[in-house]
Image (cartoon, rainbow, N blue to C red):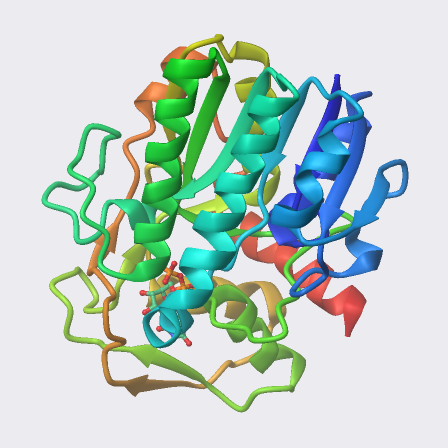
Amino acid sequence: MKLLVTGGAGYVGSVCAAHLVETGHEVVVLDDLSTGHRDAVPPGARFVEGELGAAAGDVLAEGFDGVLHFAARSLVGESVQRPELYWHGNVVASFRLLEAIRAHSTPRLVFSSTAATYGEPEQVPIPETAPTRPTNPYGASKLAIDHMISSYTAAHALAATSLRYFNVAGAHEAFGERHAVETHLIPLVLQVALGTRESISVFGDDWPTPDGTCVRDYIHVDDLADAHLLALQYAVAGEHSIYNLGSGQGFSVREVIEACRAVTGHPIPAVTAPRRAGDPAVLVAAGDRAAERLGWKPSRTDLERIVGDAWAFAHKRA
Ligand code: UDP
């Protein structure tokens, strides 16, 4: 297939673009490089530098079989401080993309949605049928796009899939996580092992969890990429499918730090800090729907494997 990958110079987008190129698809990456990196665009993909909303129409006019839409702002804290960036950068830009998809009759769309659309869960593991009550503008902007996609799918015979990521982690052999402002647990812990950070702050140790620290569902970015390929394959015109992407297993902040110690051999000092606003205690996916309908089964679920791949990438770049 000829596929447009928006945000293909970012972490998840670059890894998915690499998987698409490796499986023989023709890939065009559209990215404004606001947070992505030119050298993260995989060799074999054509690169177009441009702002999504402005450039999508011209690019899609060439004719494509599908769009994988990763381009987004994705910092929860920033979304609370500066919501306008999220309504514009995520919702308005995605609306323009959908309009370009409609104008050029692009048949397929795979969208990077998020577990943040659910907000504070009533039930864990979280199924796709759980209520969606996002607790921050980031999650709200992604949910708004999911609703937009549903209406376009029904009205314009688009075959669409939203993939709700839990905690994406690990690295592909060539591409991984490189954020200018790093907020994610595993790369921050690995910075301590690399010597660029003194200690890791544990945001709260009095949560109602077995060891008092928050529990998350860490999913390897290569497993995530596999799900995107399956989503393209199984998409049906006129249907908007929504799938959670997680492994269904939860690891606490302390367990993650322990795994990083085991992988790196570094003592990694940890300091208890106040809870971070908006953090739910436990977020774990019920992944049955993706297993049943896409045949997706994550295979890189061992925590030390996930951390080990992130470490190999971080080390290579240091
Ligand atoms: N966390 C932490 N210290 C940090 C960064 C994150 O204790 O310096 C915790 C955070 O409170 C959450 C978990 O690690 O419970 C994962 O956070 P991350 O930001 O990686 O992902 P999120 O779950 O917010 O999407």
